[in-house]
Amino acid sequence: MEINIEILKKYPLCHRCFGRLYAKLLHTNNFERGKALKLVKAMELESLLKKIEESGEGNKDEVLELLKCLYRSGLKEIKIKEIKEGEKIEECPWCRGIFEKSHIEELANKAIELLKEYEFDTFMVGTHIPKEIKELEEEIETPYMESIRQEFGREIGKIIAVKMNKQPDKTNPDIVVHINPYTKDIYLQVNPLFIKGRYRKLVRGIPQTHWHCRFCRGKGCEKCNFTGKRYPTSVEEIIAEPFMKATKGTNEKFHGAGREDIDVRMLGNGRPFVLEIKEPKIRKIDLNKIAEEVNKSGMVEVLNLEYGNRKDVVFFKNEPHKKTYRALVECEEKITDEDIEKVIETCENLTIYQRTPKRVLHRRADLTRIRKVYKVWAHKIDDNHFEMKIFCDGGLYIKELISGDDGRTSPSISEILNKKCICKELDVLEVHDEETS
Ligand SMILES: [Zn+2]
Ligand SMILES: [Zn+2]
Image 1: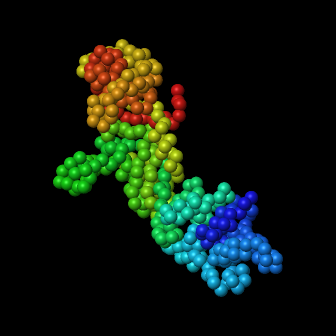
Image 2 (image 1 turned 180 degrees about the vertical axis):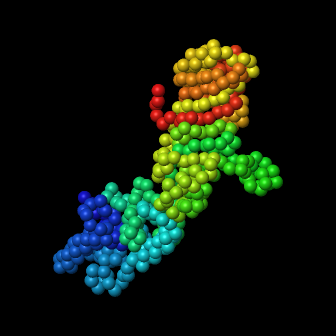
Image 3 (image 1 turned 90 degrees about the vertical axis):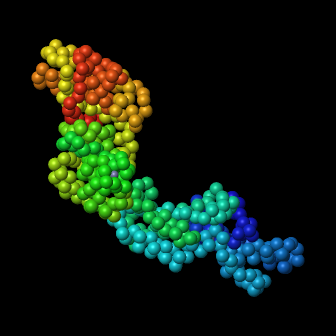
């Protein structure tokens, strides 16, 4: 293989940077590698110089020129007087001294000061380098090169890891320390904490997530009593509050596996959710204690709380969960026992064509969804009321399945009975995790 010593004519790379060009060869550090390569070359050149001086043949200036370059790049071991007297060591244009002990320690200490504010186990260093350094790197690149970002990140990471007794982790770090070693800019990216579990909503009248007041859009106005909120509370707020207190996060995001309407309860084994807590200062919290606090609200309960990760959120968004509902149906006309039988029979594995309900048209695209009802259980309560349990695909709007939404949902309970029905009460009894039959 060819060692490109000529590069030193253009750029006086220090030992470490010269060694980095061949970092993937041999297990040693870049400084040793670079210095060794330069030493071998300098020895070769000095012996060549002697031969030229003895024989009087050959190009002495050319050899001297290369020796000068080696000297300028930091090879002080070259003691011949022509060079020592006229040359001085130059600053390396690639690293510009960022690996000097005092410089790297200063940056590590600065990072540690910022990190001390946070509880974490794992971290990663993200190194940012100026454009001109990156361009230089691209110009001199060899197939064996390691980038300076990689080496710097590793070196400062080692110092931080030892001083703070924490683990570097490239795949899923709690905190990423972003450092530009050239400008000394440092900032932290504190990754969110994910808590997953299931919630039960025991009361009607609260939304799943916080809604802004529609008059002031959250700023606070007379209409909302300067709360900025359209509803006094929500499942999200009731769950998030004790978490925010315990973790001292800056913000949160509530991800539910679907949502129920404001007037619908969520019962049974609850609905899966993930709470994403942004920039938490504390990550180790007592989940049981927090569950107790949420449950004290009397409005919302949480079950099966555990630590999650970002993948859980993605899973939610892609997974259509089948549901079981309980609905109280009111009918204008008298309901007969035959009607009940008809509903049960007709709804077995029934395909429903549902155009976006009128009531959500303002926020959802107008299209026809195909969903299935698998099974219905029903019993009469009085002449104008019956109760249904419905096991169906996620994403089916139940209120419209009952009313028919002026023909936009078909077939519907109203259509099956040829009697006008509406949903008076709705509860989600079960959000099914997987295929259930
Ligand atoms: Zn250098
Ligand atoms: Zn308002």
